[in-house]
Image (cartoon, rainbow over all chains, first blue to last red; front, side):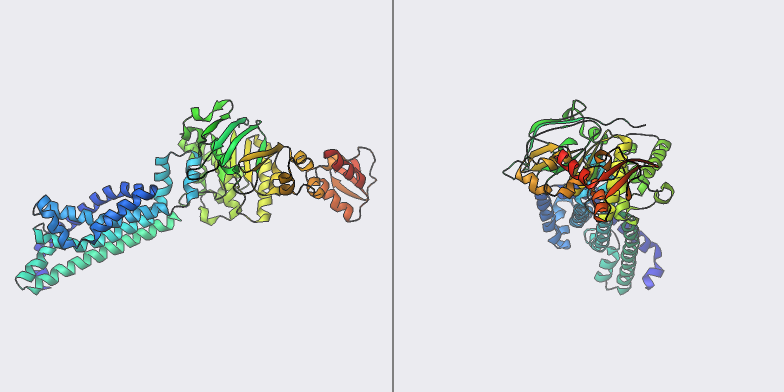
Length: 206
Length: 319
């Protein structure tokens, strides 16, 4: 822990990089996953194809995924971002689709029958009811990305992983401990607060 | 305050669901006069719900057409059409994340009513379905009993004063006692508002109790369309006879009123009394309890007498 107290500013910078990478990836990932999830929930065949393809990406070891993307996006931040976005897709799309599919058929029927347009039915009825599953997906994706983002340091894209890799290379356990502790705290904090949000939306969605 | 009921005309409508080899609705034509309550009755799978859903275009026929007040439903944009038609389903479909007031207000809000008009309409409707607005407005659907939820469902369907109300087995999921209370409420609301109602059920007693006219369906076709009394008295086919258990004379008595069978003579000469608006089925109970002649009362006045032979004459005349 000495490193943490001796160089708080350095750790703080790495934490900010880590946050920027994970939150940026999450935002982009969700923007892509939301429409894909709706499509997967609506069309059975398309859903199978989408989830199948994403499942394949999900099984690629994360280190290998980073390596595979280097020829396309070079060394640095863009590659890390793309890898994290790809990695989160599976979790987010699956949860959006499951949440929407679990809305009872009668709800959609009632909404359409009352004269809500399909888009209004989605926004006013289906999404609010699917929200617990969607927030659950965001939580799992966030925690996973916080862990995987450590690999970004390996391709020079910053983050708390910088401390870990430096510590390993130069045999400085202090750095490893500092990086790990902050990363674990970040993951736990994200998990706890998103669990709280999940509980809140679950209460109002039933 | 309410528009009068709309006339509905269904012409040679046929529906086939994808992946099936027979028509769910097979060339059905039906005229529903304005302000009547018409019940579609038949076994499950006979096409009655499908036919209902062609009216608000949740189902699209491959042949035939549906007209509301002389206007082809295909000429109206689907969401606009549906906002002008009330719709109640068995699953009720109250939105669980919205309170009672928000559920009832949904169509008026879509129609762009201003806030105060919506709030007033919500209270008016909750009162109409006999739920105290002050107590129920802010409740969530999960805090309602099955009967209360169904009342809210009816209120929501009536929110924008639709001239036509579609009801698809609306009382199927509540227990018998609550169902009969809801049926009474619906009959009262129908009398008060004069809304045209198309009502789907597989419950024969419910159908007989509510219907101005009864449509008996089987295998995607209409087998008989007439008043409940005439369907019971002269079932068109053995299927109708079996479905309605039409030989059951007591069932027919449930459709006849004391007022229509009594003799307007006599004074107070009964050994028991009965209200003129009661059914002959209830009169029969009184005879079985030992009465020989019933004095018929209309409020405070005695208006006639009824004996067992009058009941028998009425049932013969009705057949």
